[in-house]
Image (cartoon, rainbow over all chains, first blue to last red; front, side, top):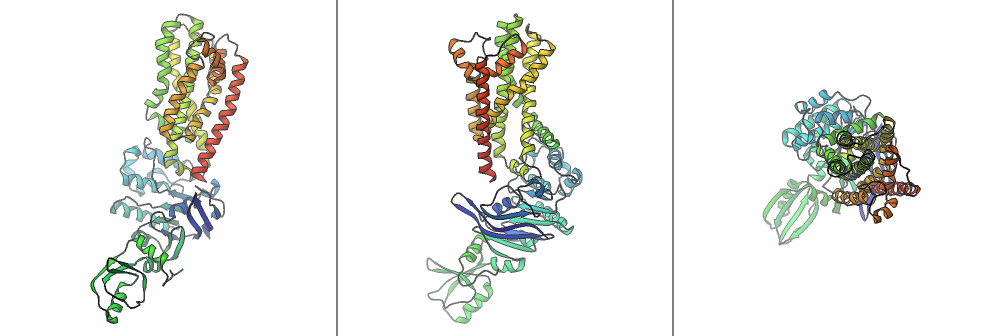
Length: 294
Length: 245
């Protein structure tokens, strides 16, 4: 059963095309990671799916209905990218306020304990640390016993320990049959949680596959060397020449180095470095030689 | 409806946690009572009653313009506002809750004026007239609520604060709130009927004493209502379009 669907969805902000003909199906029981650099269109897609915005063209569906209809949102929980809790309200009051919107909310104490916030119920949210605020914002998504939670960069700004607490809560929810759609610009986070990864770049779906398959695509490395002429090498997704250095982007650096050596070509100052996610995306989007696997 | 009350309750909680916000809208009318009404009109039962009604109108105006103008503009800048739109309720409960909370703040801000009038002046009012005045407060809140909402939805919060401050004093003075009925300076008497504050204060005067509201002021109040409702609706839809479409 499909819980959330985007069907050839485009979204334009003035001159900027934030999403370009995006298709996405989130089926019951899945844990889907939306991966992409900042500005790729992840938040726009999420805002469309939870009914905060309307697509310029195409269709979005939530539980078979229009996400902008409140009834369609009864079984979802959302954590937006920005936290923004009302600073003068106490933690417990914020929880009670959100609970009032659902027929069968999780009891306040149980929810706060699950997210390690039990001691803070009487504190005003304005006095919480950044990590505590973020944990509360994520906890709010789970109040209504949702079937689908949509988390927009849930762990941004959290320290390692807080991040693992949140991951644990997300895994528990998923193990109990819940469906999760979460966005991140950390490959590591998506690897730790998701089974299926949807890579978004420049408003388009670049890949929609298992974690392993996507890692082999975005796990691109940069092999730099100084050489006069290079023979054609297999597995190179992009070649750059800069100040006499040649930079080769490849998904399999080991094989590339072996090929370089066996080709017998003269080179020096060999360097192998991981690329940033941004560079990897750039490599995929501009690759002519090797199209990204669908 | 239940949800609207919930929204109203939490918005009130947010406001009450910063008491200066309520104190602010109650301060000026209360101070005007102490410095002008008590020494100059305090001994005259009729004059003091009308002057109190004027200050009540003043208070209603400033409470509404500030709590909606500044409150809405600030909320629009907070990510919390879009979050509430992802909950399974439309924008209506939040909006209704805001209006209920604003009305509550308005009544709270009247308490000092009424207490000063009752204890320090000869102002007198019958229980029936008092009830009528309470209802009139809600009625005359409508144009100023719409004015506040227009400011709040049309402007960013820094601009909203300035505009609210620029608007409220000329409206009070020009509408003749700072003078007894019929005794304002000539130019004020001339322009007053065309300001929404005049129709509002005349309704208050009619509620508390022997006063006949003028037709021109009431018609102009009606015109203001239509214009402000249209402006408020336009600003609200424009804001929706910018942030949620």
